[in-house]
Length: 199
Image (tube, rainbow, N blue to C red; front, side, top):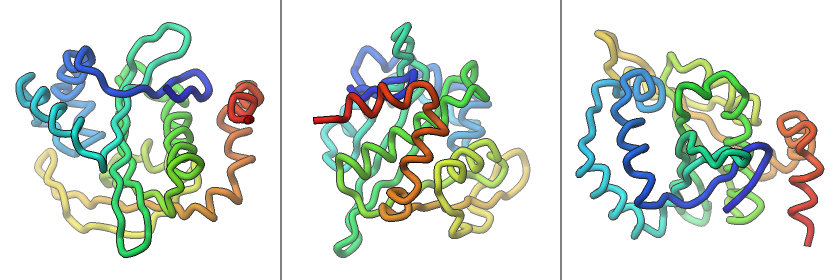
């Protein structure tokens, strides 16, 4: 488990699949997280995907929990990829709607960046977000990502074609702003987090 701020990131377990099934069949949650609101995943499909992803060494899946209550609030993933000699992580996450607009997304993104750069020694992190998901764009940019590309008309949602935006951050860019990010996002939880990292 990895604890940061008010959340912890832990491994996906089979016991989580019912909750994941509920989230992945939520129209508005998938509208923003995947650009595929008409998703309708069966429990069997999610179970098959869980078994497949569990064996994939290039995928690191997390369930996001509130530390105080242990309640599962969403999922996150780091998709590992080597391009030549550059080690990359493509980050993805979604959050139960009742936790939207509470600042949890920034804590999750900070946690994924900490794992990626401080423990996995990745060279860069990337993320994609659909054009209309302005909340996600703000979270990524507030955590130091830069918008560096557009996949034009890459999704068809609600009778319209939308762009996908591409964001990335290099390890050296992250390290330059790491202290200020931790202070700004974690606030009074900063010292606890940093204390737990000391060897």
